[in-house]
Image: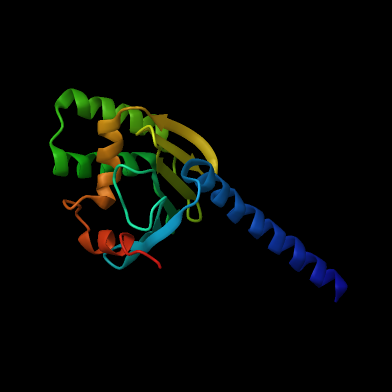
Length: 174
């Protein structure tokens, strides 16, 4: 009986450590922060990921630091994430061909293959950079403010292809 309790305590401490790591990342970039909303992306009844929006303020303000945390429910290849991101950015903002090549190159070097259970964190910093983490490890930074805005607009713009998910993300928890 004591052995089971010991295993349970170890499991709980590992779970707590993992969630504290995400909290530490958010705290490092956002300081005190609020979870604004959460939702799930499903395509044809297939759950793809759970997503949450965090901000320094109780409401989403594009010019203040914020973070999106995505917990994947399915495996996705890097090129699927890159292609989907490029398609959404193209649909919303019609970037030039040169910009698209640059965006594709940046995203290809940034986003790894994803497996069910993986987590991506994307943070828009006070300096308007994008900082990204995969399973709580840093994977890259985007210094192009236009691209950073375009990337986060995939979920947060009025022009998003998924307005229901956007609405859920922008709900403040008070």
